[in-house]
Image 1 (cartoon, one colour):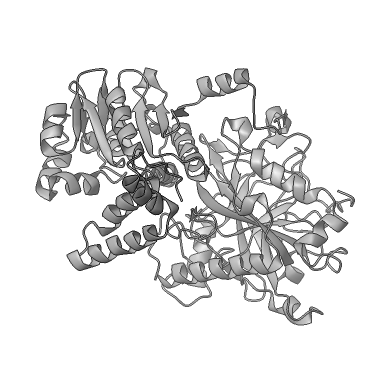
Image 2 (cartoon, rainbow, N blue to C red):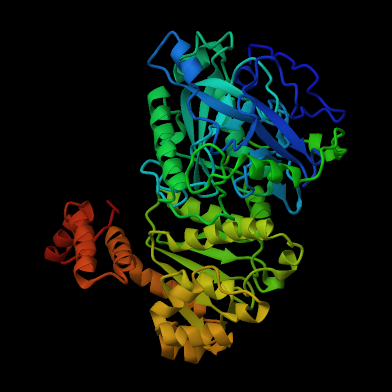
Length: 604
């Protein structure tokens, strides 16, 4: 960058990390409208950073109470057509402690994200240390996980919309600053829409020169390119694939960015009003200003803060590894050797079988392919790769390495999760995993050898068809562990066998042998041992002889019409039917029939 960040006063601790400060730089927190109240110890799981409105002396939520629009700066701005927004700074530039607005805790304090039971630090992707900008979020916005974005084709990430503030001042964690938004980057992070707004503090010396996304390259050459590269590769050091982007890796301009903000504002309004139903433990709506279903008293808000540990001024000592650099290749076309290494270390492989089939292979044979958090994240990423691919494929084969399909969740990992919040955070990842598989447009075929139990059975049920060997077994034994299925098992099983039989299977927790599962209609094809994958591929190749768009439309029509009235279901079918009429494949099918030859499907 061509400008030098201003150093904040008294905001750096002994470990070199900028701290949330009760005395932020003089330009922060919108003329000191908001102050931060720290609890616990920085860089530990106890740390909390709450917000107080100094005008009313009331604790406020940075998610729900701080207004999206900064009315004072919007009115005083020379260009009245430009809206100025409040931005809550979570992570100061050049730092890597992943601070964020916590959705689950009441009053939504800033906390450090948790990974494997420890405070999370993002990897320092060479040549940078931590984040390239002041990073934070716009209050009163929400990326709805129930809504599929028209441009990204994925659902929201269940967070306020993120902002990369590119000005010349280094802002402390907890600062509330007025920003002008000039553009947006459409990140697809592990299969979810995660918009990254590009903004600048309206008081910055460059703000009068940067009005739209094209101005950024003029005054900060290289920053936009570096930003895209950073978001693309910042999770690669953890073993994950590079992230994907919407809009062909292009930035949206100011008008596009403001449309995204307007949409996420509307989603938040539905969340706050209760129109969109979300469990409190997943997304807390406690606030002190909105006068709605989540509003609590000033005294109750104070009690929430006081219930946390008292603040320790000295942050926890950091391990030296926090500052290590990670080196990532720009070229995604790795050598065969590198690809082999990546494949050997991955828990979920994605391969191609001929030109017509994808193959998802679970790769934890030592643990009967039990899934842990990393497994789930990789499966989400692999499904995203399938969705993002331009290749014409006709089906997805799903199987397990070794003697089992999947024995469910890794209980050894889960035994260390004692807090309900942490359990739900992990289960949210598992939920995304199940949904990523279920929401693939291509027909999916589970090829089961050995165990398909608990979450493993649910993975199979989230596929469209099941091919199983005679010695395989199925079951939902969660009830014997004090819990119940959480990946769609009760509902998907009831569709196949009826509610009474589904209750009997799930409530007793008993195993079904392959013959029983076949007789009940759970398994569609029964094979000899060791032949499930081969038979599944044969089924996939049969599907591949048909038009890809038609097979996908049939799948979606059945899925969406299930459980609806006959008339409604027929209407859904007709909608998909009409979409196929003017496709090249439909014309090719008629031509091939009349010319007595095999059709050459193009998938359009």
